[in-house]
Image 1 (spheres, helix red, strand yellow):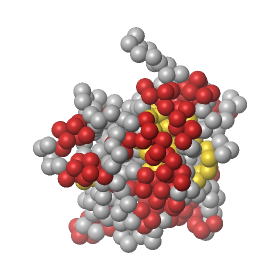
Image 2 (cartoon, rainbow, N blue to C red):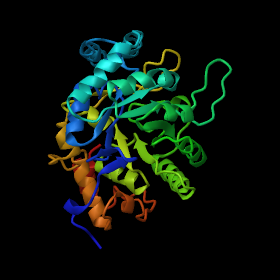
Image 3 (cartoon, rainbow, N blue to C red):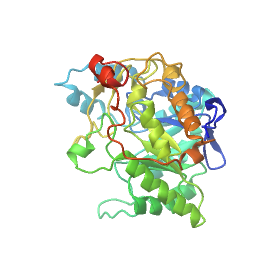
Length: 362
C-alpha cells in the first residue's frame, strides 16, 4: 500500500506538552543558531537549539564575532576561535536570549554543557525556555570523577518542569540507563557531523543508522518496562533528504541538523559551521567548514526545492518516503524494512556521475 504524501503525519511530540509541526531540530552550533535563526525556524514549525556556552551568550552583540570567525583564513581560524571563546558567558544574556525567542511566539530550546546544567536550570526555566538540552561528546548516567561534582540526571529532571534532553549517546545499554533517569529525549551520534573531528581525534563513534537503531531499541525496551516514550533524536551526519529519511526509518522520532542549515540565508554565519568542541583550548574536536549560502531556510525545510540533489525540502522528502512505504506517521515508518545496500546511490547513475548532475554531484 502507498499513501498520499500530503495526508501522512510528520509532527513531533515529546511528552504531553512539547509539540512541533516538523520533526526537525537545528543543532546548537554558533555558526547556525542565533536568536533570529531560532525565531525563523520556530515560525516554520521546527525548533533551533541555542548554545548557552557559545558566543551569543558571551557578547552583547555577537554578530561581529561570528563575522570575524567566518572571515578568518584557514591558517588563523583556530586562533580566532580560541580567542573568541575566552570571553566568559554572561548569565544575564542567557535570560535575554531566551526571552527574545519567546517574545516571537515560538518554541525555545537551549543547550548547556553538563558542568553548568544544574546552576543554569532555574534561570533557564524562569526565562521561559521550553526544552533544556544537556549535551557533551558522550554522556552516561554513571560518571566517576574525583575532581568535580557528578551531575545527577535524576535530580536535574526533578528540578525541571520542562523536558530535559540529554546527549550524546550511541549505545543500547547506555541509552537505557539514561532513559531510566526520567529524561524526555536523547540525542544520538558521536562524531558524524560535517564539522566534527571527534572520530579522528578520539577514534570513537558508531555509524548513525546503527546507533539510531540501537538507541531506538532501548526506547522500546524502556516502554515495555513501563517507562514513558523517550524521544530519540538523531544528531548529525545528515546532508540530504535521503539521510534524513533513513534516520527516521532507523527509529528516530526527530533529527537534529546543522551544516545543511548553515547554508541557509538565515544562518548566523551565512554559510559557515563549526562544532561545539572546535574552540576547546586543550583538545579541539572540530573544524570550521564553509558550505556557502544556498537557499532560504523555508526552501531547505519545506521547499519548493530549486535543485535536484536532495538538499532542499526535507519535509517533502520525508512525507514522500512515508507515502511510498505506506506509513501513516513516523511511528509506523520506524518499522519499515531496511537493507544494507552500499551501491544504492550509484546504481544506474552513470550519466549523472559523468555529468556531475543530480546524484552525481560531488
